Image (tube, rainbow, N blue to C red):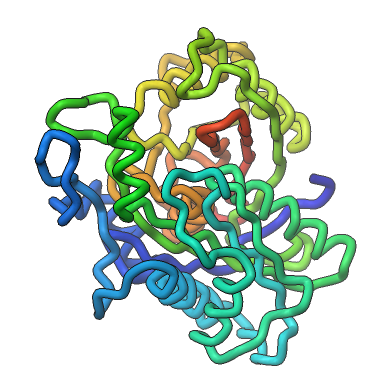
Length: 345
């Protein structure tokens, strides 16, 4: 990316809170909301998940629209100068990839229109949908950067919304031994979330802010379900590209944050990728993974991470100013994002 983006505000709906403030406080304290769901695994036991505690038991696309609208509303309401409901601000909506097992029908444009109806406002015609799952968050940042730099938009909202708590999705992941159960320790806890951030060019903002300094993308041939040996060449290339775009080396990065959700594959991947290009001799290089508290949230992963870092920067509890975020889809898509807290003392 040729210009840095600044995070102005955030909004979140997760299994541990219905606002960014509540969710980030719970994540900071290591609190989760993992409970038995009404779904049954192949051994007849209830599947544990992280469900967003909304006021009513909405389901399907309706629930996704309610969650996304709530996150976007919070994001807009906490902006220094909230926009008028006149279609002046674009929304980039990140959703599950089309090949996701059990993907809900009616996503895409209809979901974006549903979010507009829930909010009672219109977004700019440059609004769009990115159906690329976890990596979609990074692609959304790239699209936001182009809207700000090339189309002249002052601000753009990036929102990710997703759920794994549907019968077909859980059934297929359980069949492939991907869920964390009493019979499988190498799996993830399914969750659902919506998270939104308002973005602007960093040159137009002042004070304490979280900035996105570099993006990198690559492909990894050894996917989570392939039989090829994992060398993490794709993630290493994405990381190297992001660092180059940010103009720094890995030794300048203080901490990592990732969409890790429990499976050993992705832990190994970011460890191998880091080792491939690391040249310093630090004893530790920590990693945050919010999924420990909110479960696997797919397309909402990066917006959730941005919300966590945004609040951490504002409240000055980050372990260092510079982070690198790792994103990995079930297929070969990989992404990395370099983020820095600037002007936060």
